[in-house]
Image (cartoon, rainbow, N blue to C red; front, side, top):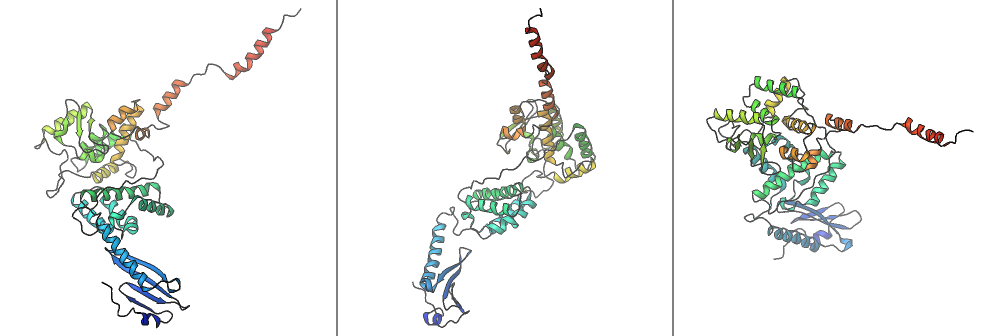
Amino acid sequence: MVARFSRLDRPSIRQLKPGQKITERGITVEALDDGDRRYSVNIMVDARRVHRVIGKESDGVTRHQAEQFIEQARSEARAGRLSLPKGRKTPLAFEAVADSYLDRQAEAGGKSLAIKRRHLKGNLGAFFGAARLDAINPFMVERYKRERQAAGASPATINREISTLGHLLNRAVEWGWLDRPIRLRRLPEPPGRITALTDAEIDRLMQAAIAGADMDLWLFIEIAVNTSMRHGEILRARWEHLDPENRRLFIPRAKAGTREQPITASLADTLAHERAMRADQTGWVFPTRYSNSKIGYRHDMTRPFRDAVRRAGLDPKLVTPHTLRHSVITKLVQAGTDLPTVQRISGHKTLAMVLRYSHVHAPHIDAAMTALDRRTITPELHRDAPETVSNSSKSPSK
């Protein structure tokens, strides 16, 4: 059915004076100073605003072309709905998905919620906010990275933001908001500084943890320094996954996939003794303290750990729970452990990630270079040799 216009008709358009405009049904006609008239469109299509200048009368543009543009935009939107996940009738805007994502993460006790909120309400929200979720593609993400780099953001900062975006998109697939995941590429980062604690510093940290108010912190540190496990892996540990006789701890949800974590003999004894004192000997090693929690285990140990770091006289800006992992892996490498074995213990996905711990100034490298330090011929011998040969070759004087 052809749309009828009551104000935007031919006589009204002809009577426009320079600077005047008429708007109806999303179409605007504006009279220019040179007597020409410009047509533009400003409409909402699937919760997304479309604002486009169609052209001027002098170029042959009429109201009919503006109407055609609107119909095309709505037809493309209808076609786009055909690619939506089953059960969805309208597309979701990124900003609405971001709000729902943050709410669900808060309910589930998600990690780094404050950082994710800052990303989504800040740069990610400003760039992707009005875009349809299913319209986000790798090309848009690459453009986002270029704009952030042009604004002076470091590769590490941009990668953290892309990580938040990737987590949101993966959850959107799980929740039926997207049909398929999107592969996101990170920017290359220069290797950062790895902080490793000495045995004496670890002892001070453990003493501070035992003296603190948090009754779980000492065991958290004990597991970390005897396994190199990650923060989240430790807190998700369950008693039913412990095998003290074979000195193994099964990790069903690890960063690089499911694995069996080797543990030391002393930690196996400590965990077996601790489990024997627990009422629940199959559940979480670090159960939550809140009855309304949906995940059942403590999801973060950062705050009590930071307090213990301060009491131990260490710098909380440099020493985090992940520092314990760095310390253990560094100790293994410096002890001369071959890298595939280190990878087996640490659970890294690739050997390249383990190589970061082969510090150039590490003592084990200095010791290896000492073993190569063998000088058998000196420069002086090189200089003396030709003269000696020359003298010996002379005939004896007559």
